[in-house]
Length: 152
Image 1 (tube, rainbow, N blue to C red):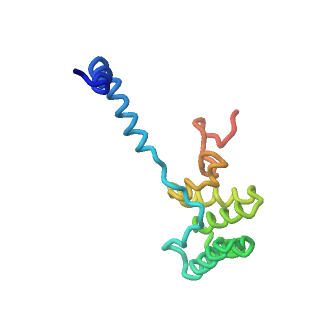
Image 2: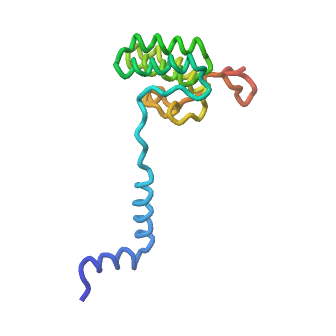
């Protein structure tokens, strides 16, 4: 005698094996799509940071952790002025401005960080960027007709 579960299995896999295959692929694909938690904390100084700038960023990160937004903003501004090419300093400044408000003030620094570190996993996938959609470079690029953002 055939058990009810066995009868169902024969029905799905015997008569229409592609349905069973589809269900297995769907199950495996669904598990593979689990996203990593997004970071909403300031970044540590990178290896290429000048020693003094690295110290300033570390101090800014401490102030950020204490929710002392205004003081942290001052430190990150100091870091961006001392070494303007550090994406992490711009990202941290943007993140702190995002937390303190106004949010609009943070956009410039998020875009600068993305321009300085294209492909940086944390910068490109940070929750504040989701408000602005896909992160794109703020540097104008030529259109197919060779013009920068305008048409004739």
